[in-house]
Image (cartoon, rainbow, N blue to C red):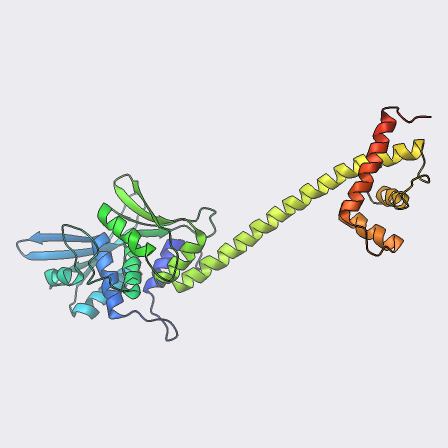
Length: 329
């Protein structure tokens, strides 16, 4: 992914790029659904004495070029094209497609009404057209956080509450994935969003952004593996500190018992070599002590970690009694 553009822009430009021979090509029905959604969410319709005008606006030149060519391909018209550069604030450039010829015919064919309403079944009637409609909606008002962010989030917004709920159901009903979109109201707009990283990756494939999906999954997996490695490192450090703390207590017990009782009077023959191993290896874990003691004494079956813990509990019980003065001679 180019480093100088946002991930949202990368996704949109992946959707509208020319597909190679080995990739799935967009059908005319899918293209029509894409255009219908884009017009519905991002189009402006004006009706005057000279007839109906349809304006399609975007800050992404590649997206505008895609829909400009799509209008020409589907309806055999030459639309006008303009751009405007803002001189204040973010200084963005906005590109506009101006459709005057056949505007009413196009709106009727795309089933776009000034009154809004549901998604027409003549536009969306299959998984392919559903994917096209979702893609067009994302190209119009969609955004997705970079996978480098810990906050996974993809959304499409609209001022039309009915359309937001219908779009949510359209995404939810896609048969080849288990999407769980939600709708919230944010100021004066309704936002359809996905939060789960695996759902976002699948949704990018659903809308035709296959290269972006691969990039998203690669970064997500690398990030998750790094997070897992960090968690393991923290666990290892915590376990190491726990081992050292236990070792300090065990060594104190051994030294006290050695001073009072000596290490040659244990009934269990494993106790003395275990004490000697602990004194010589302060940072050995219980498991490592079990392995070392089994090798040293050639034990078969080998002694277990729980056996080692039991021996140290016996040692601690004896040392505690000495500390209380119960068995001082």
